[in-house]
Amino acid sequence: MTATGAVWRNWARTEKIRPARVERPADAAAVQRAVAAAARQGIRVKAIGAGHSFTGIAAAPGVQLDLANLSGVVAVDEALGQVTLAAGTKLYELPSLLRPYGLALENMGDIDRQTIAGATSTGTHGTGGGFGGLATQIVALTLVTGAGELLTISETSNPELLPAARLGLGALGVIVDVTLQCVPSYLLQAVERPEQLDAVLDGYLERSASADHFEFYWFPHTETALTKTNTRLPMTAARAPLPRFGRWVDDELLANGLYRGVCALGTVAPGIVPPFSRLAQNVTGNRDFTDASPSVFVTNRTVRFREMEYALPRAAVPGALAEVKKLIETRGWRISFPVEVRSAAADDNWLSTAHGRETGYIAVHRYYREDPHPYFREVERIMMAHDGRPHWGKMHYRDADSLRQTYPHFDDFVAVRDRLDPERLFANEYLARVLGH
Image (tube, rainbow, N blue to C red; front, side, top):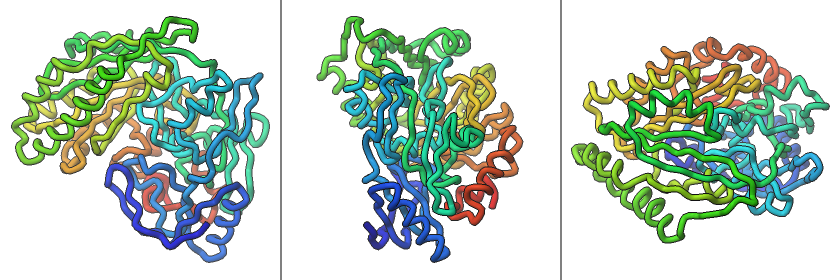
């Protein structure tokens, strides 16, 4: 299906573009035809996911491929626990799609609005010191190259391309399906507690290594961190989900409804932010519940924001966060959003933010009606001093020359791009900046 392009905006309202046309292919052959047509016409083509990247990584000024019709389970190998999903499948669809097979994702992030291809291509990672990001769960994928060819990449077919293609930024082709290594369904026991920030920083390395899934949020203008520790349990364990009303009060009324009002008011009256943060530290946390893994991993986020996230060598996280805290205090900024700290295991995907090192993450946010750039630029300087790597789908100011210094296989990835898309059919301004022309 082809349509005249309307204005496309991403969720964070940081990017907008009017594509020359929009196509909605329903199968791999239709993707091939769309790519071949764009090549003949000399215009670029990009697939979009759900628009949850804060960068322009999916911006398509030429042909925009909306893969919403490429959705659902393609195949299941129950013996191996491997599931092939069409590229446009949304993460929030996975629990119901995987449930009949008794399977689940090994790890998830806290937002599930993305498509599976978009989430893996940009480096969505979740938290857990012993677990890799979503892309590490890919054992095979199929993409359409710049020549319009349908290419299978797996551990047995073109395996040399797998470290590049698992996390390919949309630069290598249009993914039409991915095969994930899943695990048997499991429960998570979630323990959420407010704790003193200094104590949390002192224990961060040990807790990140020993807990299955550990993260915390620090509320600027306070000395408090909200810790979240999730422990994996078998499905036979006792389930104790949050009461529906209690969850609505915590996650919708307070975390979304009240918080949205405070953020909006804070743009015109910044002085209310510190006292609200001190109030938030007293009314959030202190929950202990057990439920199916997707219900614990995922949080509903309706307050619109902008985000920058950096991956650091894990040991550098406590010191870097202390520097961010000092920066906010010194500049007198009123920051309404908490700073999020997570972790991930080292992996071998070439452009993974956790490539080759045990990794910790620091994410900073601003309400979408506030100017994020002064805050983000200064935080980025701190992160770069610790050999930080920016999340590909979140705001940052780095370019190819800068990024090449922190990714050992950067030029290997570019060589694969030269092989699969020599004419840069899938390029856009963002990819030109971070990968070069």
